[in-house]
Image (cartoon, rainbow, N blue to C red):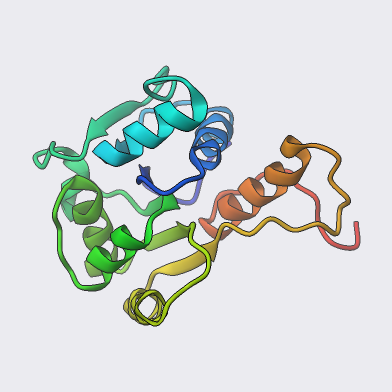
Length: 189
């Protein structure tokens, strides 16, 4: 399936919810056959949470490149590389705060900054609850800068009977928000 983008970056931070990042990468692996324009950047804390929650040290990297957050010379750190979409899933509030204030402390926040400065699509799948006033102000700032804030809140109207049935429609909706079509449950169908 062709995407409407010149490439996709997936960022994974240390927020709880590594399963969301895992499911997103699995779907993208199927939806983007060439996979050569799919890059992944994982923060150090993201790696730790991934291992803790999923029991594996890293995502299956078959078909795409995974960068460490300190690889600041990676192509995704520059707007000239032409990536059109970045999805940060899950996205910690610390990462939101750094993106909101323009602090590029690593490759993930630099790539997000590039998306904003180039007026490209940045989807932040935030994972925090409850939200404090600082979180809300940072979410407002990134929204005003052009990012799309996507709370990692599953929906229940399709009456899910398992974790996969609960999370798959959420992942599909994240993909749709990022401009990537996938078959999913649609209200009224």
